[in-house]
Length: 100
Image 1 (cartoon, one colour):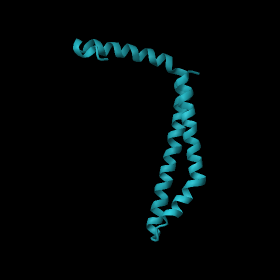
Image 2 (cartoon, rainbow, N blue to C red):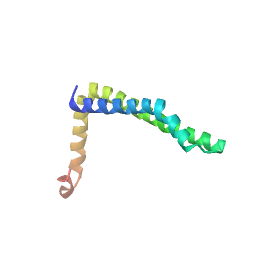
Image 3 (cartoon, helix red, strand yellow):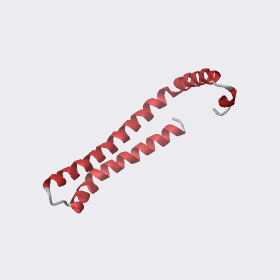
Image 4 (cartoon, rainbow, N blue to C red):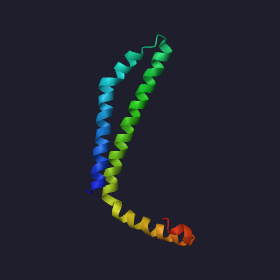
C-alpha cells in the first residue's frame, strides 16, 4: 500500500465518520434550531439536510472504493498514461511542449 492510497483511505474514513456523526447528532439539532413554522418548509429543510448527508456518505464510500481499486491496478494504468502523454506531447509545438 503506497502513501497516496493511505492518505485517500484515511480521508475517506474521516468523511464517513463525519457523515455518521452528522446522521446521529447534527441532523435533528439543525432541523430543530431552524424550526420553520410552515410544515412545507420544515419538510423541505429536512430533505435538504438529508441530501447533504447522503452526499457525504456517497463521497466517502466512493473514495474508499476508488482507493482500494486504484491501489491494486494503478501501476499498469500509470504506464499507459505515460505513453499516451508522450504521444500527445509530440504533436505539440516546441514552445508549448516544454511547459508540460
